[in-house]
Image (tube, rainbow, N blue to C red):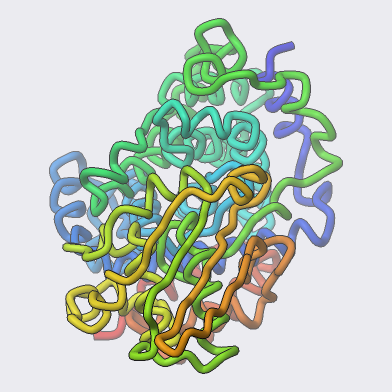
Length: 456
């Protein structure tokens, strides 16, 4: 039996009552946090209106993306736009090993399609949990080979999650679900080159995974066959996009061990690989009351992927470069004792004092940090002061990681900080309450209605 068929059997046989309570609670948390990322992206991504303008030319419908006042898009296109927003400013959640941001695609797909199909909160939660499971199982086995070959994990793997979430909500049978996953394997795409050129538009390929996944599910619903051997076949996803994948391990403990608990939360709007260095600098700054003017130099040792993605830019020219500049992130953290969405705006990333501090940051490959990658992603940070004092910290378990978790309260505060840019405090509080009670809704129209209540 192919992996697509094993996944399909599991998906078809799993309903809300089969989900453990802690999986349900985690899924609701993922919906809340992912929608916070969607909202932040809709408000802060420079190309938000450009994307909508392009999508208006691709078909009409009755759905609006978050932040949009026009209900003029087909549901799949609205989900695609929301998914793009979710990844736009690097606040979306991810898997601790595979580098996939499942929530950015699975959650918008489940909510938008769930509303269109009149599904209950329980059905939405089930689709979300199943979508995460398949994305993480594929992504964690494909990496690090996936990245090493130049493919973008979220863009390539999230299409499977969108197909699963959409297929479950459409009520596809086992054969159709296998075909949907097989179709998704034929549509999986996206490259890491976007982290080097075109950083600001990188998120579009992640958003496209939502559209392609929904299309794969609809194709399967019509009876169109998919590529059943899409994952482990001789020219399938694992062979072409990765290497040395343990095929027998991909479905091990499926339904018994839930991968959604391997999710990390992003507490800073930057590439995840840069965040250990940023957080270590924050911790040292707070612990020793380090003043920026007293800093002589900063040295960061990290793993190869972090160095290649974030270790070269010191003076970002755009918000996209700011998200992928370890030196700038550390400098902002030392200067402002924080690193948030505001630091992706021009007044911050062009600030002369911050850039002067960033010029003092040197990044290099550290063999010890590299040795534990990808099981652990961390950094060694050393801050030398003008008076000869040096402070050092080695950090792997970021705040919000599975080994250093944050709870609903802290994630709700993160959601609120982002959502208040678009909604009134009353609406934000109502959204948070709705997310916490999502499994009680017979229809998610009230939740989606709140997302339409944009403050003027």
